[in-house]
Length: 102
Length: 134
Image (tube, each protein chain N blue to C red):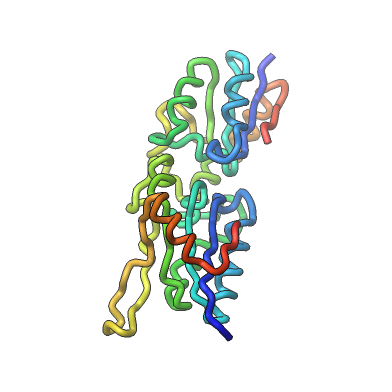
């Protein structure tokens, strides 16, 4: 069964992202939204952990939340896919369950 | 009324929570009462003053231009913790170019942002009469 995980907290403020990565199963998808988008940026103290997680999970980030925070899509970690709201809906429809890491 | 030194400590990213906006509003109130107001940006707080914020896609007000008005309210000391920027892969170039006009120096534009180490920021905290956390 495939799950879509959403993470809406900054990895610098909470351990939501690291907990999600630790507990998600192989083949799951992780979507970073709201303050969670900071976890998608390259060159941070958490980038290596997130890059490492892409061996097992597909990681997405919500474009409008990046733009709101002035985070450039060019500086998102290679391999993370930027999606818009319709992409969010498609991901929700594509996976059997959704788990929110608050 | 005696002038006190007020420090507003900003530690949250904008938009995900309301802290950043609330802090900004209280800062403007403090400035209106002609107090000696400073701001510190620590941890995720540094994201508040990143350039290029565009909130059209999330249906929220982009309040980042307000930081540019702080100089006009004589809020001219914005301390940014260097270690917090570095942990986030950011540099001074990623922040808005915030300036104030020095009326004693022919209205020369001077930078408001002061990049400081944790150690230096601790000294600045020590000099304050009131520290407010957001």
